[in-house]
Length: 117
Image 1 (cartoon, rainbow, N blue to C red):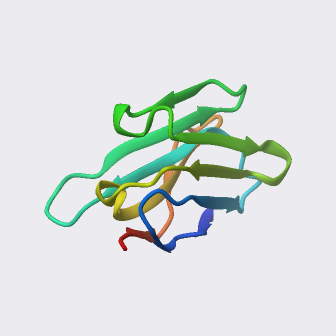
Image 2: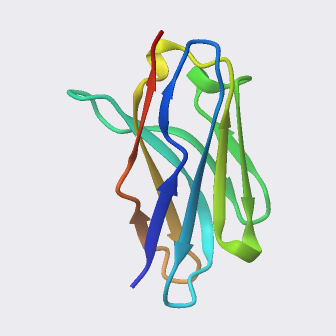
């Protein structure tokens, strides 16, 4: 069974920074694609950023230039560094991973990010 465990969420002031981490484990898991979605109550979950196992990245327009996604393949861990945070970045952030081979998608339980003064 594959598990994704997120960490790094919390309360931050506008203009501040956060680094989210997500570690995948179980069943000899290797992620073809890993990344982050976010969701605000009453809206659909939306892609924030994703990274392939060869390092190719994609960012949603609202976070371009303010966020950097990276991964450590040896640790099956993906990171999201977010800078110059804005109130509209407030959401629950969900890690996801697509496994190599089966291309099954797995989700973390989510971590709350709140940007407020």
